[in-house]
Length: 362
Image (tube, rainbow, N blue to C red; front, side, top):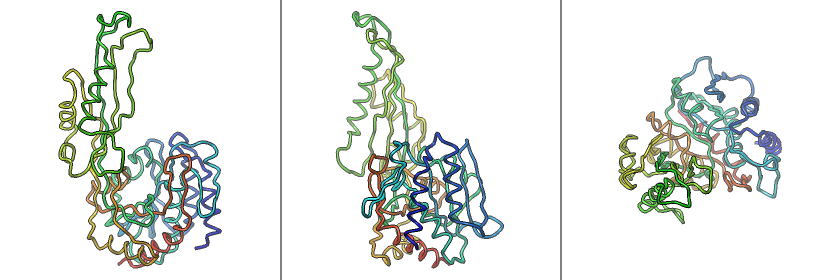
C-alpha cells in the first residue's frame, strides 16, 4: 500500500461535503470511491429517496456473497474548516476522517487488490448517518445477501460483535391555554411532559460514565405556544432510547408493547407514541469468520478484541436478516465532534488485515 497515494486520495475524499442534504455531493463521493476501485468489476447501482448506493463485485451476475465489505461515504454536518483536511503527525483531522471515509477508502483498495477466489462484494452507501434505510437496508430488500459482513466503522482493528437496539418515542401532553398571570385558569402541558420525563429518567437515569445498560436521551421538548405570557396548551418530548438485548422491557417487544411500558412510567394524561423499534445487533463470537478476522488483526500486531457498541450501525439490518456482521475499522477519535481525526498508524495494518482475511476465504 502506497501511503503517499492513499493520503492524497483520502484528503480529496474528505474535502467532499457529503452530508445528507447535499445530494450532488453524495453522488460525487460515491463516484470518487468507485473510481478508486477502478475498471474490471461489475457495478450495480441503487437509489432510494434520492440517496445513491452501489454494490461492486466480480462477474456478470450478482452472487450470494461469501463476504461483503460495507462502507458509508456520508458524514454529519460540519464547519467549512472541517472539510479542509489537515495533518498533525499521525493524525488526519477532518469531518468523516474517523467516521468513516478513511475506512471506506481502505476497504475499496483492499477489495480491488486482494487476490480472492470466493465471491466478495463491496457495498458503498450514502445514508448511514440518517438511518441507513435507503442504502444498506434498501439493498437487502433488493435481494443482496451474504454469509458474513465487515462494516468499516472505526474500531481500532478490534471487532464489534454486539450493538444496542434503537427506538424513538414521543411523549405528548395536552392542557388548556390561559394568560400566564392567571395560571389557575390554565393547564400547563409542558409541566405534564416534564413530569413524564422525570418518570422515565427515574428508571433510566442519564449515564455519567460508560455503562452497558439501557439509556434514554431527551432530544427535544417543544410546544406550539410562542408567547411567554401564555400557559402552553400542548407539549411534546422526543426520546432516543438505546437498549441492550438483556432488557426485556424493550428487546423482543412490539411498538405497542414498548409504548405501554413507557406509559406506565408517565402520568396517566400523557400519550406515548413509539415511532420505531429496531433490535440489538449481535454476531456469533465463536464463528469461523470472526476467528479468521481476529487472526488477521493479530498478524498485524493488534489484539482483535471483541467489543460492544452503544450506537447503532448498518450491521443491525444484516442481523435482522440472520446474517452475521461485525464492525472492523481503523482507529481515531472525535466522532461527530469538532476535532475528529483518524489515526494514520492504523491504516496500513487495516489494509493488510483485510487483504489477508479476503485472500484466505474459501
